[in-house]
Length: 82
Image 1 (cartoon, one colour):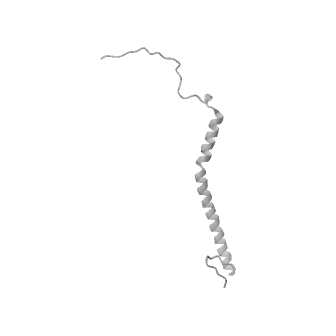
Image 2 (tube, helix red, strand yellow):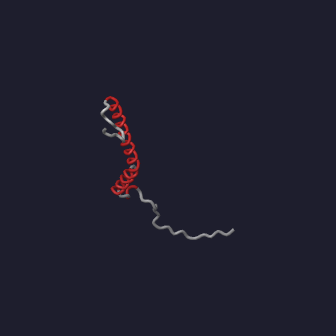
Image 3 (cartoon, one colour):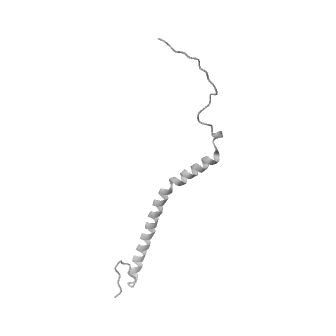
């Protein structure tokens, strides 16, 4: 069995990833804020569209009840004045 040995010259041993003290703080906070806000944009759009449809449906339901009380109100697509 042959073992190849070579001299180990070690210079300036340090980690490849910097410590938390050397990371720029403001840039990291801005990036985290951007990712936090940007990650929720699609969720917010879907949520507000659903909320808008719900409010619209409740208003139509309310108008249907008011229409029952007053026959002069017509909430139909083909309402015509005769």
